[in-house]
Image 1 (cartoon, rainbow, N blue to C red):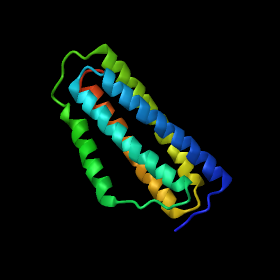
Image 2: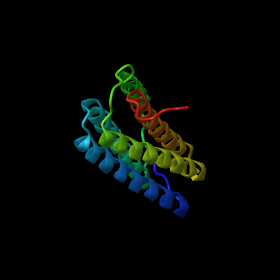
Image 3: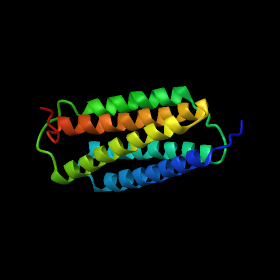
Length: 159
């Protein structure tokens, strides 16, 4: 089923496309810089998921309604949850560089998730809204995984 995007929808989706490209680049670069193998794995996993988000955005921009595979999303949700909780109980001195990388990515995920909110509300097509909702949920799960990692390593203390 082909879709015809409004100018506003196209502009918002182009913004999301650039956000996804930046997320892919940051996660890839940060995975290479991270000292903790667990953090490297987390960042590499999120880079792969951001690539899937970019593919979905590109599909929408090309006028196609994305085929949302719910099973794939459920697997990713389970994987994100496991990665975010793996770090629990593994406290100790954290690497300051890793803490900076995590802080930057958490801030990035907060921003990207919020921009999806605007794009979702501006889309006319329910299928596109559903696809963007799915991506936004995964962005929030990335934030949760980073938050859990940081908290378990003493990098983020909730008072």
